[in-house]
Length: 393
Image (cartoon, rainbow, N blue to C red; front, side):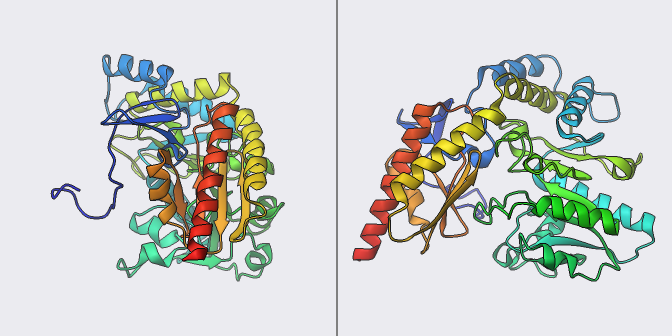
């Protein structure tokens, strides 16, 4: 690791030189099968020709002007995202944390409009919403919060997937709920059927904003364009990032109804947000996703990989559960398994472990059946070998 970099990361000892679809090639020319996609970012794989062409052409024309001026690509992208999501207006930024910051600010403005002076937002245990102070405060993971206290006030936590816990809250100062359709960092946790629809009902009854963090689940990852669409529970606010730019940093906060009118000139902004280069990349991404119907492709391959993983691992002691939605898959073990990341790397496979005990798979959405089967087989073999050796030691 370079002495000149801060020590907040502990990178694996490999550096990649280039990519081709679901493959990454290191500095020595070795090929690695990527089942992480840069943490759900490179959903079109690496060096996708449509994104590459759009970036190169736009970089040769115009990269940045600021939001002091009209940005045609931003307007086109905003229109497209609203059509896909059912929202009405978009604020563009640079990351998922910034998108969630914008959502939290919308909730604060919503509170002021209702005369609530000390507003609270409902969030879930084991959630992850970002690492700025506000989004860190909203996150339900004490480990990532440690050392940054005092956290920002104004959040109340409930168990994920527990509608009765939400219904039991004293709602006198609650103005919104912020929830993930599937918890990614929390271990690929999928809520019970009807959870999002139930949240929509509660928000309608109590005048809360329903705010859905689609930063990891959005853009076709779960088998729908957005995770909330599995239940047709239309939110008031949606946050996006990750796969929206396929590696080009861009985030978005979408809103409808009264929430879409809360930001007015001067109330929020971003120097780089929605610049011509980022929006051109995102337009290319949405073009490819639409043309290839990648939400349907992700749903089909997700079912295939779940079945294959269960075939490989269902009878293996130490495997607690295999779960997933679309190409967002998790294998929960009964013990910590972070060592699997290094073992997979040795076998030229890139995986991720989250919540200490869950192998998380987020392969590019463009993989074919053969590649999906290869990932399932190789992961199954690694997990079985790890559990066998761990039990024998």
